[in-house]
Length: 90
Image (cartoon, rainbow, N blue to C red; front, side, top):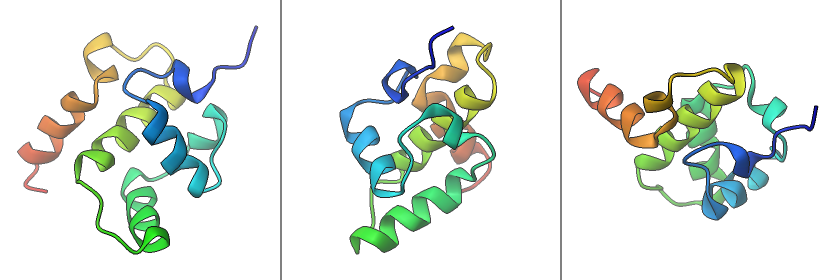
């Protein structure tokens, strides 16, 4: 079986691939076990900028797909994670 690429994950486009590369993540398996919040904080720290909070949602979506290739289709969209984050008050 071929290894999944980051761009095979729904909601992960070229900008997210570049952001993840800045964090040393270039393969899907490297996302497993990662904290989306920690990835987001590291990205902001490394770049010296506060990134749009939707980047956090993309990271959450990517980690979930990496950990569960059979993730329900609606959970493969970054905006599903955005709604979840907002509902939790974050």
